[in-house]
Image 1 (cartoon, rainbow, N blue to C red):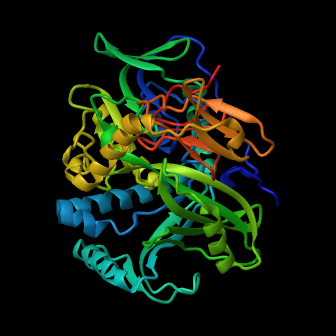
Image 2: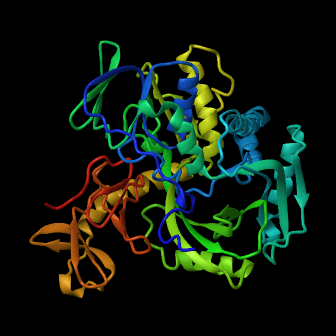
Image 3: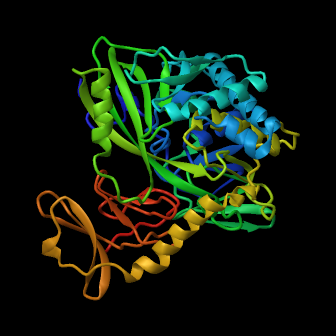
Length: 497
């Protein structure tokens, strides 16, 4: 089997095609963003007979959803002890209950709609190889038991990796194929979806929102921004309260070897493990080795993950590699609800911290209740307008400092160079004819040029040698070597004509 550069979830799947918006349109609700959050919100609108459309600037679920490891779990790292310390036991308990309910609801949706998406019930295991982290495992366990959660246990006997010392297990979690899920569920409301329809601008007029695309406009009563990173900056200021993190993934055919549970370590580098059955092959998915998007220390990211695959299955065949991005909040809790107190009927869901499959279900419930003017449980836990995350001075300072460094200082520190001195298969920012230019020289010496500033807030870009992309260290936008947008919040390409 040769999967090449595809996401593992695309193998042997005929992706649905959706129309492009080619006329002005009015609707009750418009969803911007066709990732797993937008799709699950759309499903809830469909089930409630609410008039809506969903638009995506590319193909739906073509980024983070497609390149995820597709774990469905309430075990989001060692998060509950930290939430309890910051916000109290009640908030930690509500975060847990919201995610456990989301798992059950997702299972029920799959069953009710008869969706074949390779859903497997499994245990989720967090582990460490570091004796000094045992106390963190113990604290998490005690916190969970204090909250009354009984489907958890401390485990010590694991054979997947030889040096696992301590671990904590959540029972009855799940894993699935997200693309099979998406293209099954969207068949229910296919006529409501528009692909290759980019929201260029949003205005509010006469108590309605107007979404402008390249050639058309959408008029709606209520607007939901479900893009990966919010395409609107003010007055929500989410670009201050979040940053983007890049994870790397390799997949491998491991022959007859298989295991059902999912794994995640709490050490550095990060390791995420799970298996999937693809076309009768047992596939190992190894993810992690994270770094903040825009970081230039990217050497051998995939090599490390390949070495983990070889530890598990020495004779495995490496199939493909990819990277993906996630929006990370400063307090580890997503933002779901009203965009800001100044924007009535405008809603947001973002900052999933790598756990979008439960969070997207939570978002669909919270936003649906808001649309129907119902009191909704968990709203305050995920309150999108909360400002206390910026009290995390250390992380906030890091975000602001890196943005300021990139916007103001690096513009004056770019080294002058000459084109011929760039090694092949490398990108650099050069000063050519008194203008700064992002230059990539491919393996054959062909040159590709871009404007080296992010079109979001004009941060100076860095070149990612692992993925051959131009990455923004401020807010995580990414561009290919031609200057095309790969990841938001940027909304304009950086081509040099």
